[in-house]
Structure formats: C-alpha cells, structure tokens
Image 1 (cartoon, one colour):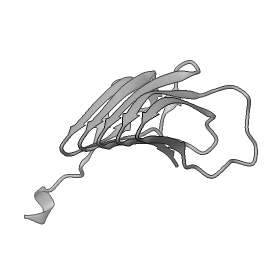
Image 2: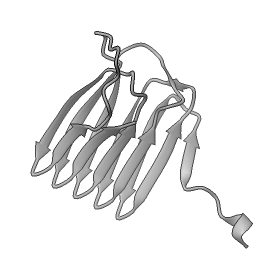
Image 3: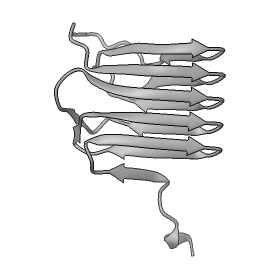
Image 4: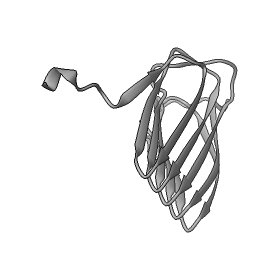
Length: 123
C-alpha cells in the first residue's frame, strides 16, 4: 500500500501559477518557464518552489496573501527579490543567505499582505 502514496508537491506546467491553502497546505513546483503567480493561505500554508524555473521577462510578480497562515516562496539565492508586502500583525522576510555577487536588476517582486501571518522568501 505504501507505493500508492504520491508526493504532496504538485508539479505545475503552466507559466502562471495559483495556489490556495485553506485550513491546510498546498505545495507547488513551477515548470521551466514562469511568468508570475498568486498564492493565498487562509488558516493554512502555501508554498511555491521556483528553483527550477526560467523567468519570462524581468521582473516577475507574485502576489502573496497570508491571513492566519503563511506563504513560502523558494527561490534561487542569486535572484534579486523585492518585497512589497504589507504586514498587519504579521511579517514579511527574505530568509536567504546573501549571495557573494549580486546584480542590480530585480528578478522577482513579491507583493500582497500578511494579516496575523507571514510571507517568507527562502532558498
């Protein structure tokens, strides 16, 4: 019976990704081409893994909404990420270690809000 269980991470082929976690979690991994996305976590979590993607035009925007939950974006360390998240009794952070060589161009813009929750960028 153990062979019947599948990974909870959903591989998404589309270039624009949406995810919704309500009283539970959703985990998605983007395909090679990524143009943007929208993640919402309500009393749950939403995770988007962008480590295997190529960005179509820069900057790409992801809208993150966290209410009593959390949104995690997993991105390569060398990406330059701009956080434009409004925290209301919550937080937004870029938890990646800093790369030795950074470029000036913004690769990813994370926008949205966090109410009693959080939005985190990780590697």
